Length: 323
View (cartoon, one colour):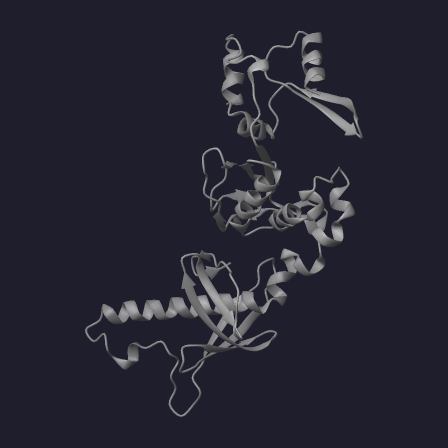
């Protein structure tokens, strides 16, 4: 393919950066088109060659010679790129619009983890431009290692406020057929039942998963307690029992009512009732029933526990709102 691409460029006397595309079938490949620019996948080449193709493009456009001859290039390791899009895979990949209420991206590691992006938290994604949010590129000594790095990096990529393809990308990265390089243009359709199961749709997760409601409730209760303790500390009587945020009631069971609203246009509020217990836990009344819940925290972040089972979740704050 490399030889054919060079022959195409030479045949037309082409000077500049360009990308020749082929389609492969078995051992044969066929010319599709040539784009007179770098493609969105160019960071993969940069990661395995250690070269800056954008710099090369500018130097050639300025009349300079190629910085390095093709026969001196060497490929080391394996790189994979994932494109994070504001789109809904469960609705035939329709673009998603809205505000990036929360955006956390994996930490870049030179030569190993790279994030190319042009958006920031708070930006509005509209229908007027391509909905790509970022390109995530990872490198490893071999394909298996690169895919492990990809899975870790995708797990650390968080977006709230609009639909994304992150769940699909995570499922692809973990799929055994993809790990074995058994894929083609029909890969997603062929494995749709595993990659796009209805039960894991972002759309229905918040409505059905008690852990998400519990995490939101526990985070709000923690915030209220923190604010009450700060206010008490700044007052003239920091030990006053009236500064406690424990929902104590005389001759009655103490509780706090929490009011939430769903995203996505559902205006019906959801009311949760939290009963504090002497051991620091809460009995939470959730849409799915009552659970015993507590909130711990370690170096990786909040760790809610429901009925004795811990689950790692991230809670994003947006003013008084929670995502």
